Length: 561
Ligand code: ATP
Ligand code: MG
Image (cartoon, rainbow, N blue to C red; front, side, top):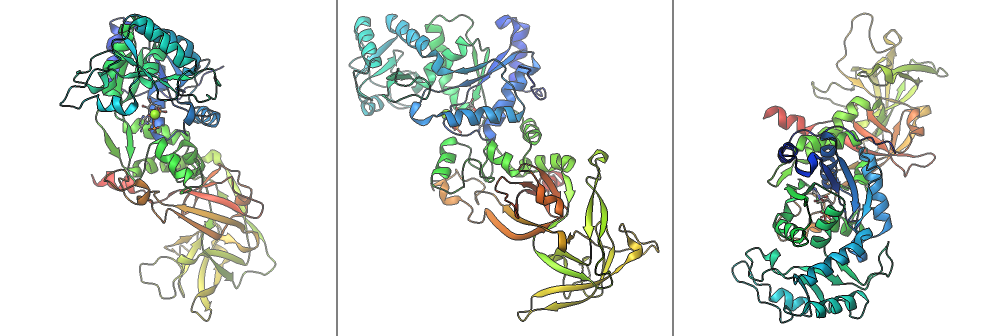
């Protein structure tokens, strides 16, 4: 398979470590990383940070990066998640080539390593209940208590471990624990569990195994089996590093991989935890993992985010050793910048107001040429039909406008984008006082949008031809969580959902070309924002998700800084 891995990584402290290792000839001066998701949910933007870091680091040092499914928790994992993860990594622009692995492929080997530890007197089967184990673990200030089963003979342990594997005991009846030190200052090191009984079917190994390895045991050994050199993970695992090293050195693994921790990504108004995102899906707070309000890669993709914009974001946030929270405005800024370059600019109105051009001939139909993207000549032009009746945005007309309102009002003249100058001659209202129609005159000499007599107008409005208007449904999104930090405090994060995060506009219209927009196609609707066609589109109604509004709050923040 040809491997295309997007962009090389900018420098960071991890690269500092790697460069020193290369200089000293450690690992034969090779670099081999991995991205190790658990297939228990869809990937989110936090995972994108880890994916970009692992793949671009390998690329930078001409090394390799594996994709490894850390599938040791059968009850929560399934093939749908595995598929979605592969799709998302590919979509981001990274390739693992032949190096797709599953921890479950190593179950036999891992079992053998556990036996080795037992024979060395470094692991034992404990019959204490989960409760008791927890109680006897001690606290930060108090040492733990040795288990009464801690000094079983190696032979007895081996036999019990076999029986655990063969399904002789129910879930929770026994665990295999490392024999380290119950008074260790790091609680993680107080005889941590290595294997638990779980009589659950695994989506790849079926009913073969009745015991499954714990993360700490499986992870370091999977890294070593694959020849990983630098095992990059998030800061929560800092306390587990001594255990990572203990297991590898106890098994006399040569050239053990090095675990390096970095700060996980947090974003305002967002939760980044598969467990919490799963709850939003299960409790129907969103329409699914790919709801465009979700911070999942599938949600962002459906919303209109491009892989380039997400990679750009991951590059800008950098890699640090202390946790922090990134303003969601930066993510929005990145997609705006990218779509500004690539999206076609078209015209749509969300709340249509009819305009009749009184002096325009009734049966006449023109085709007006419109530029697709003024910043990109290759994007070409398209034709927009023009005739006597058009729609403009309702908010672009005021009956009694203030002086600085440079749009339409009685007696005022504006430019219709790409078309003509029009002047408001009169308007009609219904019984409730709502404006129902505007009547204008147009100046035929201003075709294309400029006046030969040098007459200037201050406003330019987008418009849609009434006879050829494409019916649109527009979905406007706001932050999924009203609170900037939904995970802080004692309240359930679900109580902080924003009740106004989705607003659906059913009566919008757009240029005829929008009727045929393919799901995933992005546009800039002039003066309105960036929009992406949705898979819910049907004949007679094209559905668009607003990717981002035009106003860039990030550019504002960073300019005033
Ligand atoms: P979650 O809490 O969302 O389930 P996780 O860490 O349990 O995340 P994994 O599938 O185990 O999910 O993660 C795969 C990799 O992605 C790990 O190396 C993990 O450190 C990294 N990762 C997960 N969340 C983030 C984040 N918010 N920022 C950066 N990296 C992350
Ligand atoms: Mg996890």
